[in-house]
Image 1 (cartoon, rainbow, N blue to C red):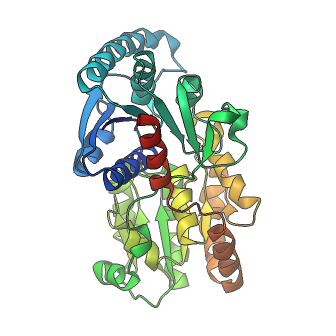
Image 2: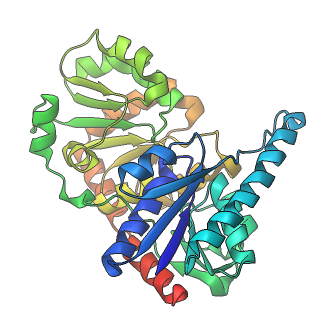
Length: 360
């Protein structure tokens, strides 16, 4: 059986896509899988690192602030549709899986037109533009949140949760402490801004470094490549209690060590936090379509499963909020207990089973 998987742009699309591919290979060891991504985006490196072949399309997002620049975007879209048609014709997949992102729109539209059954996976509580445009082309739509019939035909929806990275629950706190030169018994604050980093969170941490030093905590801070040099320069003024990295590859161990997590409210990050039962402060990004990260975060906040700090308030209040929470053991335990009840387990396998069913 052959499966075409498309999507990307951020880790929030790529990690679920790779998890689905891994699950397909577990269920069908002879599966032939091909990814389609967008040239210049992070999937073009992350997918091959995971062991899969990927072909890039020249597709790009529309420039909403400067519409006159979209002529070249439309030309690239046309080229991408033509290339996607050639890819589907040559590969002849039994099913196509779209996880969102620019490339997914072109690849899934073409696959549907050529008679290939399309399955969509929507990570967010507020559906993304690409998946909303593809809803009529899909035979099944796997979602992570209830109430998604606001966006998709009810008879196509399957509640599966979001696939998360492999072996996430097998982390070792002592191993992470040894790797970073930290004390496994000390409270540890983990700060992650998503795979691309988060400017506001990084600025909040820089502003809060003196208070963090005074608290006696340990901190692991993932900055993202774009902001790393500035953040590292600030971090170098402090001691070994502060670990600053542009990217954290061994997330299972890092999560295991963390007492509290500060994170953006991307769907994949939230799914990981739920699965691990981690107390968290969520700082939704204001730079996403339809403000979907706030919708993601509020789904947890309304069930007392996380704390929300607005992006606009982060520099002033994020670190003080974290320090207050880390001094309140009861609150941390309550958040951990509540967020764990929202976990959807074995999501990748359940999605893969639907893909195989549709392909057959």
